[in-house]
Amino acid sequence: MKKNNQQTVPNILIRLAYLLGTEIKNGRLEIPERFGRGFCAGFVFNEHIRMMILLYELTEDIVVENPHTGTHGRMILFKFQNILHRASAAFAGRQIKDIPSVLIATSNMDTEAIIPIDSHPTSINIEIDADYLNGQFQSKEKSPVLQSLLLNTQPLLFEQMIYPSLQKIIDEIVAQSTDKTFELFYLRIKAEELVCQLLMELEKRDEKQLYALNSRDIQAIYKVKEQMLEHLETPPLINELAVCAGMSPSKLKRLFKQIFGNSIFSYYQDFRMKEAARLLKEEKLSVSEVGYQMGFTNLSHFSRVFNEHLGMKPKQFSRSQSG
Image 1 (cartoon, rainbow, N blue to C red):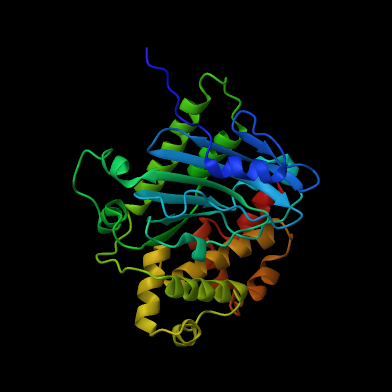
Image 2: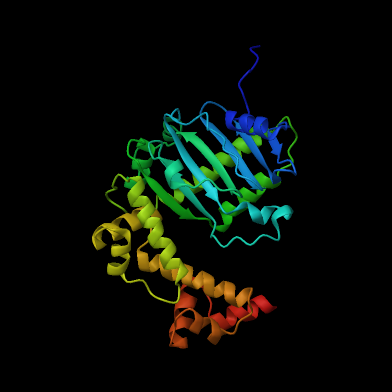
């Protein structure tokens, strides 16, 4: 029988271990106390798919040259971000304001210019070969969004919010204590399950035409998003946001919806109601306090919008959290 000598640990993890003066054990690198805390884990399942789990904080910046830069070829990146703090007691006290989401980038997108290197990342990065992924589909009938992603010829970036069934799989990956014999098999199945669930969501998007993106446009769109979410009490004005982005209102609306799968106002309103729910649940504010803080002058209108997004009125929600 032919012995499988395939490397199972990503080269970037090996380089990081060397820089930190430590060892990788069972695909996992514990951050030495003098550099910070947490861990990194990396797995090369086969030539088609690999995964990195990043949950750490560093006390100093460490530059690690990615040995895969420029050699990704047909790999599509799925970056599940701001998600792992829920599954780790070591990070239980840390407040992360960012909403859990997934970034999906084609191989010719300069992700290093778009996705900042963080000194305390909490993410799972999955890279999967586009041809392999395309071969998993029985039907050739795909939505324009899914078709464009799998063709992997344009620089494209999508962002999708994490929903409970995705979070459950993520928690299973982080908490897994599978026997070593089955570990790679188990984790590969979970990684592919994550990607499958995510592609099922992307398939629902209704864009008929997708536009190739560049770093400047994406950075401008994210600047608009951050500006909008920093002022949830003020409904967005498209013309003002377009000036901020340095693009026409029509281009701003088109690219924003392409990346986030939602119109600017709907995206804003969704986050506005998530923040309202957080204020009711965690800050224990009254319904009127939350409504006014979120910029509503009419509490009946606030109640109606909240009900549309959360499935119950704010008073019901508040009572359900206190029980």
